[in-house]
Amino acid sequence: MKNLELDLGERSYPIFIARDLIGEPDLWTKYIAGKQVCIVTNDTIAPLYLEKLKAQLGDKSVCEVILPDGEAYKTLATLEQIFDTLLAKNHNRGTTLIALGGGVVGDMCGFAAACYQRGVQFIQIPSTLLSMVDSSVGGKTGVNHPMGKNMIGAFHQPNCVLADLSLLDTLPEREYSAGMAEVIKYGLICDAPFFEWLESNIAGLMSRNTDLLEEAVYRSCVNKAEVVAEDEREGGRRAILNLGHTFGHAIETAEGYGNWLHGEAVSAGMVLAMALSLELGWLGADIYERGKKLLELAGLPTSPPENMDVDQFLQLMGRDKKVLDGRLRLVLLKGLGEAVVSSEAPEATIAKVLRAAGVRA
Ligand code: NAD
Ligand code: GLY
Image 1: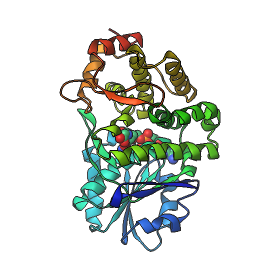
Image 2: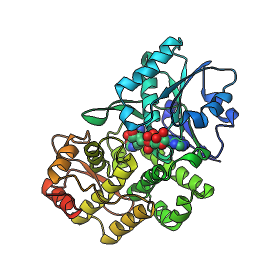
Image 3: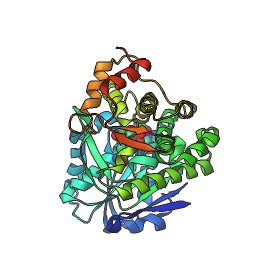
Image 4: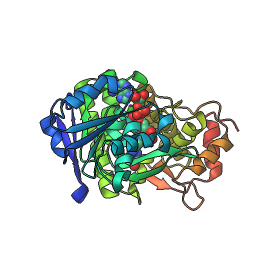
């Protein structure tokens, strides 16, 4: 087993990474303070793992909320189901919520925990690769609004994160690849040796070799934990975690939530961010090619969708919340492992890069 601590003073918490962690309650049930527990999951994950999780919580008073599966349900309306159950079962401020699922369940459960009776504790048990390496770590929680993704939310840190790698046995291949986009992101933004390690091990990782996977999840979480510990509320450096995300959010919004997976949109977005960095003369063509190739080997899209045009792209990017004072702030690369947040790219240059990537004029 590997583990690390996200250092946030009194809000610090451990992240455990290994196979079969759910079945080791001595390790993690100590992070549940009271008697009441509410497990939040969805109708895909519940039949696979809910009973096993409940079986570990012997002396607790446990209830469950099974949400409909999908990004389309990551809404304020769906959140009501969690509050309805907590109130109907008389859960008090001492309750602990457990998120059992991917990023959608984790973001919603975390936001419910941030809001219920002005804030209760919660634990993350991420079940996708993406949620193990990104969304379960760092305390960003929330839901979508029809006018923008993740626009309603809160920072609320979990008590612990349990990355049980055996849950990935049932994860569909496309979802696994989507998670690999965020793994590769850490190499690109802040960890060149990790990027090189990924280049050497991508075949084994794609066949889900346990030792390689444990190392990849661990090194991703170490990188994320370092960035979050430095800048919990994204006043500055944390924004580098959004490499490719402004382009990616435009793709997700244009295509409809869920049609392009988040990690797929981030992959195509990272290639655009690298292309823009190249166009600005900040990144060598060799790094651009290596980044693109690694994403391809991970089974990810590296071009934007064919049905978008440049104006639509720019308009949707402008609506993204990372816009400051009317200027597009983008995460760009000044080398492998050297991300910067910059407003320097002129709109005409962004449009040129989009056209070169095949987006209609
Ligand atoms: P997801 O939660 O939708 O899960 C993907 C699919 O896999 C779903 O159909 C789910 O039911 C299924 N699934 C999950 N675990 C499974 C398992 N073990 N076996 C079989 N099927 C399984 O998607 P995701 O990629 O995990 O998360 C994407 C979400 O995360 C987006 O909403 C995104 O905005 C959010 N996100 C949040 C942060 C953050 O910092 N909070 C960071 C990145 C992404
Ligand atoms: N996924 C970006 C962040 O956690 O800040």
